Length: 70
Image (cartoon, rainbow, N blue to C red; front, side, top):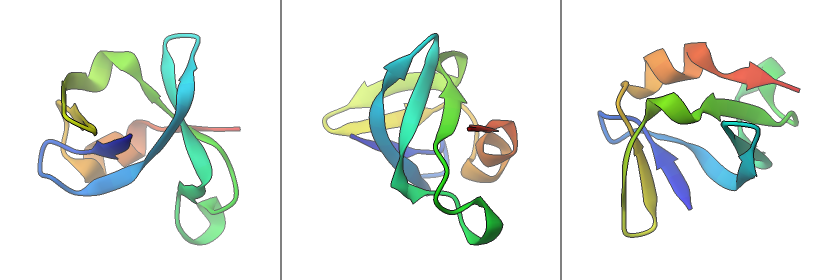
């Protein structure tokens, strides 16, 4: 499923849910120095699911700043 910010901007693709967080796929997660890592979005940011999209309650730039890397 695609993860998008409240502003409709693409953040990544769900790999799976793990420990209260959405784990994004490596190949579609992060840019520049952040490429090639798994990124995680807190489930608390999920506003809802619309079809095949997970919509967050925060705009993409804010949500991206709240991501965790591993």
